[in-house]
Amino acid sequence: MSLKDILEKMRAAGDPVLLQDGDGEWRAAELLERLSPLRLRTAAYLQPGLYIAEISPGGYLGRVLFRLHRPDPPVDGPVI
Image (cartoon, rainbow, N blue to C red):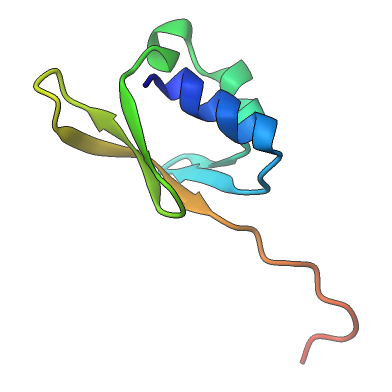
């Protein structure tokens, strides 16, 4: 599965998860627009709730591309 396939599924599901790397946090739709076609073709694996990792040419998990992060829900009332 490619990184593009994973991001498209996440966008279609409407999941509010943020994808975090060393440069910031993005939603799946933002990354689909921001990343190059070459990067989107990267073979990748989604570990639901944890990360998206690159798959090496040998078929092994490589480096983590993005960590999955759920935004904090809005707080009603005063924060103590």
